[in-house]
Amino acid sequence: MRGGALRHAAAGVLATVVFLGVADAAARFFAPTAAPLVALGSTLIEVTPPALQDFAISTFGSANKTVLLVGMTLGGLLLAVGIGVVARRRLGLAVAVFTVAGAALAALVLRRPETDPVDVVPTFVGSAIGVTTLVLLVRRAAAGWASSSSPGEVDPDAVRTARRAFLGLAGAATAVGAASLAFGRSVSIVGREIGGRAVRMVLPDPVVRAAAIPDGAAVDVDGVVPFVTPTDDFYRIDTALVVPELLPEEWTLRITGMVEQEVEIDMAEMLELPMEEHHITLACVSNPVGGELVGNATWLGHPVRRLLERARPLPEADMVLSRSVDGFTASTPLEALADERGSLLAVGMNGEPLPREHGFPARLVVPGLYGFVSATKWVVELKVTRFDRETAYWTDRGWDARAPILVASRIEVPGALEEVPAGTVVVAGTAWAQHVGVARVDVRLDDGGWQEVELAEEVSIDTWRQWRHEFRDVEPGQHAVTVRAIDRAGTVQTAERTEPIPNAATGHHRITFTVVER
Ligand SMILES: Nc1nc2c(c(=O)[nH]1)N[C@H]1C(S)=C(S)[C@@H](COP(=O)(O)O)O[C@H]1N2
Ligand SMILES: [Mo]
Image (tube, rainbow, N blue to C red; front, side, top):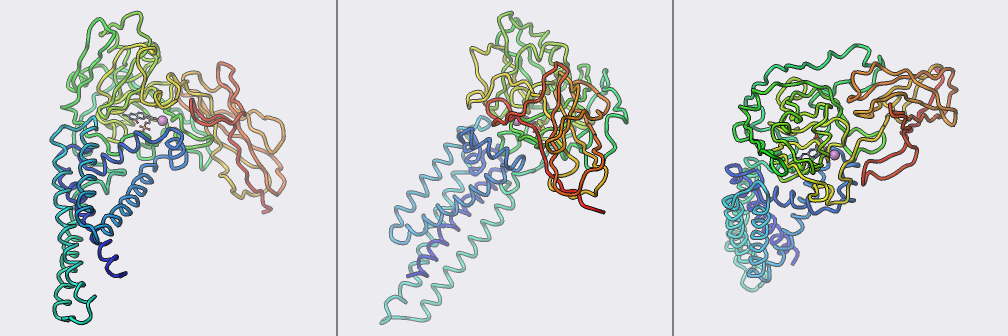
């Protein structure tokens, strides 16, 4: 009977929605990762094979988590329908599956680095109410319609009453599920900004101010990305499905491991330290050629070098394993944190406290290294160690342990497939080779020779550099433009195309555009 299957499928879905909704709502009073959906998603991120993870980041960029959530929702609906359909014939089995799924989610919650044992409470409460909903709905679904399947004894009133009872209960379950999901927060995991705005942290003035950015740092071409990336447009990449909630008063940084003196500082002490401000361009190793996972900001922080001087690393140490409150780790060559380049324990970004998504209240920013080996957000520990003793999150998944940034360049104008008027065609974009510096950028039209472009003023070797070039008398029709950069060490950006793993995609950025008669 079709209708029966449909009612039971609906019962499965509603019970699941009630479960997840109630658990999600209850999780607001616990750790963010206490929500079972969040724990499941976080675990999925952790166990996703690196190739798939890289595909997701390269393809969906900062939206990769939305894609995961949509996938999880579809998978969950399928399982819920299955449970409902099974419940039609074997309610006991369905209840068992539901309970086991609840217990499995509770186990995932427990495994998250940010959760305490009490954080399983929302999952248990949600699961108990979900199972109850399932049983009640299935009983109604069976009872009401059962009489109509034996035509001899149809009692229209009884059928109507039973239907009303089922629909009433289903309506109530829908209301409870929807209201609790709205009150909970999994639905707003993506781009959520709670607390961070409300939490006050007053940034001290820097003792070393970043150099003013000269007008000449930007080429005057519409469509080129701004030299300083506005904070709201700054790319975001991390393994955290929910942004960790770390209050300044809860935060401490510990320097441990191979040091003569362990150091621990809290935020009050941190904000007393002399602050420096630096323009630094951050880049993600997963950025596809020509991609947007790169951004430039003015960071405010205390030099990590100074903190390490207090701890006095042992001479055998060659790496610092930085750890985030959410368990993420990065392996940074000790030298990159201890030398004069001005690696920061940053608390400010573009004149404001760090936004939550970018590491509030404190993160690392290291010129010259990809983010995954250096830019730990929500950082709480710096463990001084050796590369042959410890490995970091991404190294365990096949990526490079040290990951210096490769010289790169990108065309921003004209846009890919754009139509431009015949005559002089202006081409412009950005190039970067952090901590080495961009020495030259070349472009070529179609299969012509390389031509050197006009470079914007260099602000520092740690920031990207804009460039522009004019091609004169370009014939109407389709054309391609290719770009390459050369760094100050003489390294020419290679044309060879490689995958991002283990240390960034290589190859020249090339776009096609069409020149049309005016
Ligand atoms: N805690 C934590 N920090 C992290 C990551 C992470 O997954 N977790 N990802 C790193 C990576 S891969 C990059 S590219 C940068 C991105 O920083 P952003 O999101 O502020 O742009 O953060 C780094 N810091
Ligand atoms: Mo990254």
